[in-house]
Amino acid sequence: MSVLFLFIDGLGLGPDDPTVNPLAASRTRWFRLAGSLPPPGLDGRMVVATDATLGVPGLPQSATGQTAILTGKNAPFLAGRHINGYCTRRLAELLESHSIFARLIAAGLRPAFANAYTPRFFQDARRLRFPSVTTVAQRKAGMPLRTLEHLRRGEALYQDFTNAILVGQGYDLPLLSPAEAGARLAALAARHDFTMFEYFQTDLCGHAQDFPRALRLLEDLDAFLTAALDGTDRSRDLVVVGSDHGNLEDLSRKTHTAHPVPTMIWGVGAEAFARRIRTIADLAPAVLAHLRVGGVGTLANPPEKD
Image 1 (spheres, helix red, strand yellow):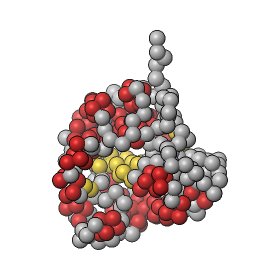
Image 2 (cartoon, rainbow, N blue to C red):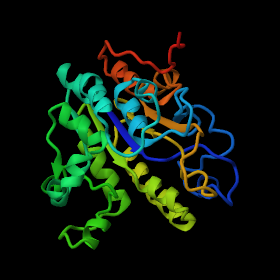
Image 3 (spheres, one colour):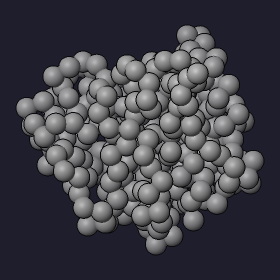
Image 4 (cartoon, rainbow, N blue to C red):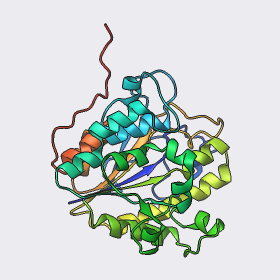
């Protein structure tokens, strides 16, 4: 029994308007997500419209949203605001105490973060000083970061999953089709209890308001996800797709949105998993409950102030 979590940055549930929403214009199998949601289980998945605001004023942002996803805590409420970009000291404290990676390791399970880091990352002082939430979560849990050597051995994927960006930067690596990359992710997930892959080209595309590119990204994601699902034994394992905030679903604006985000679930226990999800802070506890690791609560609804 394992969980594969595909995290897609900046993917919301927006208007059923194909002039502004690529998810309304998309002809993909899984990412035509606008208007009414698919009926539960009809195409083998559960889809839950999931709150990303967590009751905190302002637009949801990546750092607090991802911390909430990974810890089950209402990170923007605890930090006092939505925080964009990089991991702050307060968020790092939450990750050190509550991250899903650390909890799984403490329970004797095997988590994996599938993304590979380039040599430039380890040499870039600014990146080391201002790391992402997922990077900090791995380090706080004592997990070594995967490198291009892992990628060459088929034990990791780059963040664009095809290696096109790396090849463009001069790295000697094979190009992967989205389907080949999805099959690789499924094979990696089969060797771990929990595997997370982070994809953020969607968020960059949303900020750029690039509609043609958004459609191409959704087509690639669709093929990638389809191959990952085909490579997963869904009678035994669970596949989850989630996001931290909206963005790509409304290209009439450059900013994030307050729209709910889709949580999509396939495989064994999908119905029970879906019933646990109301906000993005419910994802980590739902994974831990599915893997029968107890003791992690949520603070999805902030307490009223005195």
